[in-house]
Image 1 (tube, one colour):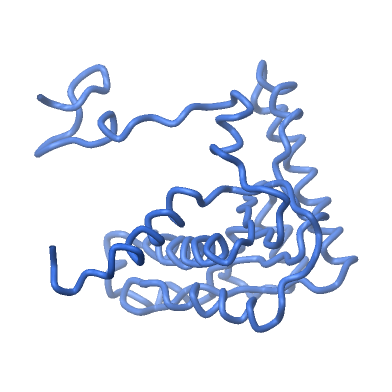
Image 2 (cartoon, rainbow, N blue to C red):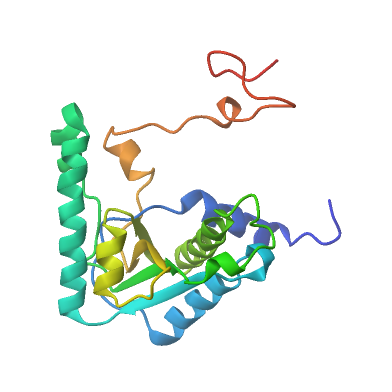
Length: 221
């Protein structure tokens, strides 16, 4: 055991937050106290970023009319996604894919403009700006779970339309509509597993050693 390790109880809490984090769609209204929201956003802001570029930008949605417009963008994309799914269209339409109207807070997580100026760590992998923003979102997600709040990441929207709606500058890009707030209960398993939409693959199917998986998707022995 490393001398820098946390206590047994502290380590257990970290692993518990990771294991019990859920992509929530069902919220119970309420509110998130301003000081707690600030604390959660500070946790997001402490995420690692490539070249310390900190590409994340968060827009808090406070106007009900604007929240409704975001909901309508999500609803439009939900129907287009259903059409694209073909034979699974009806099954998809029965899923609850967002909580924009019901959650206490709506945040839009976005990539800043001018990202091309940041070369450090991005010369061959420019998508590391997205990876950095994703780390910030995950920080927020885990902190919210530790505080007993649910959070859902909604990606069903036209990013150009949402950027225009929010007056975002050219070159920036909205990546996530984040629904945050109190919930009646956390799902005991991912909602898509509970609904029979998908199943979780075990780690041993995704972990390889020294080279990519052999034919058939199984790791090398």
